[in-house]
Length: 190
Image 1 (cartoon, one colour):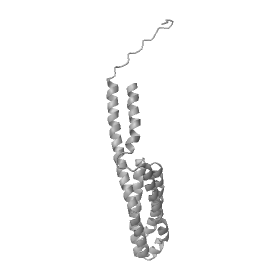
Image 2 (image 1 turned 180 degrees about the vertical axis):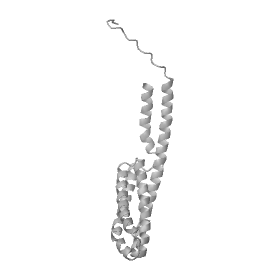
Image 3 (image 1 turned 90 degrees about the vertical axis):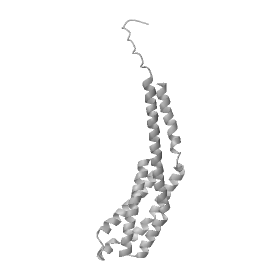
Image 4 (image 1 turned 90 degrees about the horizontal axis):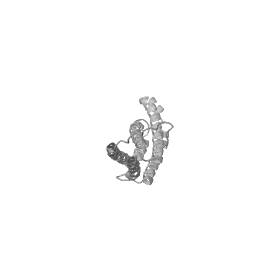
């Protein structure tokens, strides 16, 4: 029993320390990075508000641009929401991956939409969009790096927990089995 407790205690003591080793920034720095990314992503909205794909369709553009603008706005909102949620729980790999995938979707949508803006609406607005994408490049790269580092640390934690669990199982299996208690017949006293 004591060995089981010691194994569990070791894991509980080790996990918080392991989360801050490696290439991950401190939690406060990760929160700031994610808040900055959400703020920078918010800056795409005024540009998207100026885009008018319905007028493009009248000029011969494919109808898909109308849907694409709506999808782009949705992805921008999802990315903002996801990065804010990740800022609250920066240790959550699933949220980090979701933020990364949302960010990649936003990038792809904005690139495609930028081509439509350049061709069917206003090259200067397309340049403004591309310039803003360039300004957010550093934050996007930091998120990519953060996700890779977080995944590496989670993988390392899993490997160590698995090794420790195997060690604890081996220790427990070497312990002699407790002798079964003999039941006292009723009426007899010790």
